[in-house]
Image (cartoon, rainbow, N blue to C red):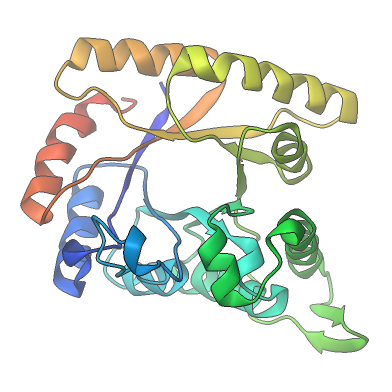
Length: 271
């Protein structure tokens, strides 16, 4: 069966420090494999329902949660790469990986929300190019044997230099799947086996064409926790497709409501 994770809410009223810390510790105590946080940076007032426009930075949040937990993995689902310059992103990623003692799982994406790109002054039409530049730069930084990296004609030391976290590329288009093949992981939205079957087959074909291993798959969606038998069937079907991780995403108001979700989720995990 796939490993199980949960989305920890970093938006709205339930994203205060106490609720975040309690939720992360509860997920760890429940035996889950990892917890994940989302990424929004500039929500317009007319699109703030459910969050009131309050979103915590995902990497800063994971650095905080690294100090609140001991074992559980810490993931982004997904970090929007064009929102941030490559070098500061690489520094953040390396820092969280170092401080968490290697627990980071780096889900990444190209983004979609036009107002956020507008607020950042970033051309949305260039998001794929910008994402590829950051991904290639991350690979270069973590692969540097002598810790020396060059950017914009300047050589510098990339330190701290922990092991590169696993990368999971979001999206279902062929460009996204090709990125997943290059970087070793795919993170589709949704956990319906029937809907994932076709892109999973495309992923296998692209990997074979490139002479690369089939990427690890971490699917993010909601499991039917009220029907444990159906949830187990869904997990088994996902495993048949090659899904190694399932990230359960559910809305909850506070840590107690999250614990109720965890009570239904934890028994479904691999023994």
